[in-house]
Amino acid sequence: MLDKRSLEGVWFALSAYLFWGLAAPYFKWLEHVGPFEILSQRVLWSVVLLLGLLAATRQLGTLRIPPRSLGKLILTSMLLAANWLIFIFAVTNDNIAATSLGYFINPLISVLFGMIFLSERLRPLQWVSIIIAAAGIAFQIFYYGQLPWLSLALAFSFSFYGLLRKNLNLPSIAGLTIETLIILPAAIAYLVWLHVNDSMDFGHLDLKTDALLIMSSVVTSFPLLCFAAAVTRLSLTVVGMFQYIAPSMSLIIAVTIYNEPFGIDRMVTFTCIWIALAIFTAESWYFHRKIASRYQPQASNSATTIN
Image (cartoon, rainbow, N blue to C red; front, side):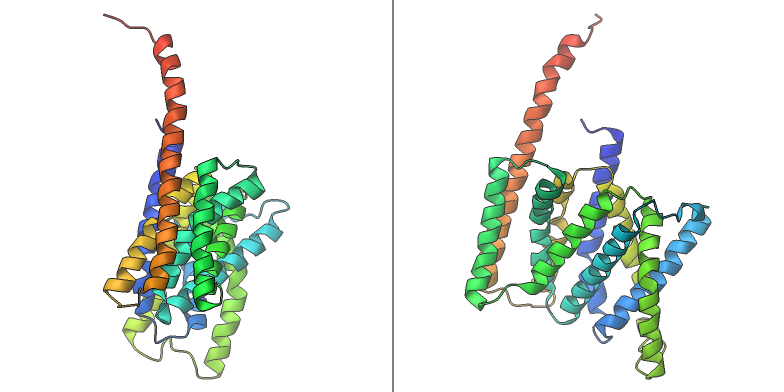
């Protein structure tokens, strides 16, 4: 039985990944805008939204950087910006399926990072999952003669972000606000450069484009707030079990709505990842059920029955 805090983490994780599954079509509507401007607008309007939320909830006082955490926050901010930019570039260049592959790989990378950096021990079948996933990546290398850079960049950047963010122990809204504030000067500098060179799309195309760029703050902030809340309540291993909801939705959207190619090359790679995730999920479910069953008899023996 999950305790209240863990159950909250489950709902936060589900909300984050369901929302992320719908992010690709949203940014596809902005494919006529340059990726760097989309990123800069995301950062700018996210800061406005997040500061507004903190003010409305009287939490502006939580905007404090913990001692010795500035370096980590700068790094998480850079990883976040890189992940956003890679995703935007992929979506607006007809590579939604590549983002799907990246986020399918992500749970297994998170588990691997849990072992390397957090001393979380991997069980035999978890190793099997990672090896099968690696075989899928190896096939891509063999087929194309190069790494699937977009997919791997998305997976590693977000896994590193989750790892570092987990240990910062910052309030969800305040933490994300600080991260976007760190990125903000670079975003404003780029927007100013666009304006000076008469290259900015915001305010010069149509109201729909302006509205989509402004509302990207919601698309950006809501799932990240949920994710930040989830990783502080659940282990990286458990969070990893939810992370293939979004890529499943993205892949279906890419193939059925945007007609992106899904040939033998992608079929083999995705099949390896799906098998790996199936093994990982089944093993994790069995393991946690086995652990729960060990404590159940003790609870039954200690209970007092009243007739």
